[in-house]
Image 1 (cartoon, helix red, strand yellow):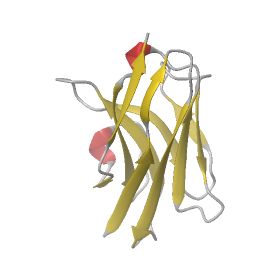
Image 2: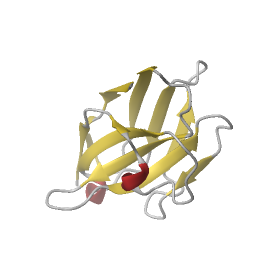
Image 3: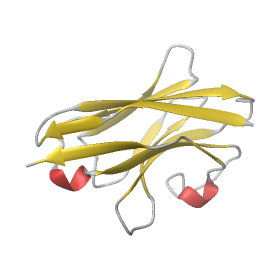
Image 4: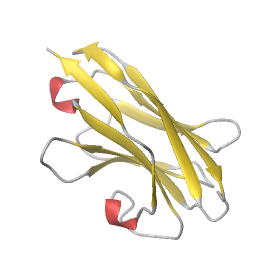
Length: 125
């Protein structure tokens, strides 16, 4: 089992920045990808960013490209999401997740087996 514990988030004005953290523990061997998803009220979760657990390469949804970055801590088991130039439409519940196994669509939540508890991000105009 993999445990994911999130921290960070909160409220900020449009144009501001926030950073989310996600610490993985337990049986982290075999993790291929970690990712961030967000969920708007009444909507399905959507992929925001992923990071290859081994190589550190990243990918982003078009809606956040150029504004959000994903990175790993020195020990690699911590994932960060730096969110800059935040917009009111970024307001959502954000989740980190881990995937064991290679997949082609790394922003598809169906591929992720382990989830953090979620953290609210609210951007006011």
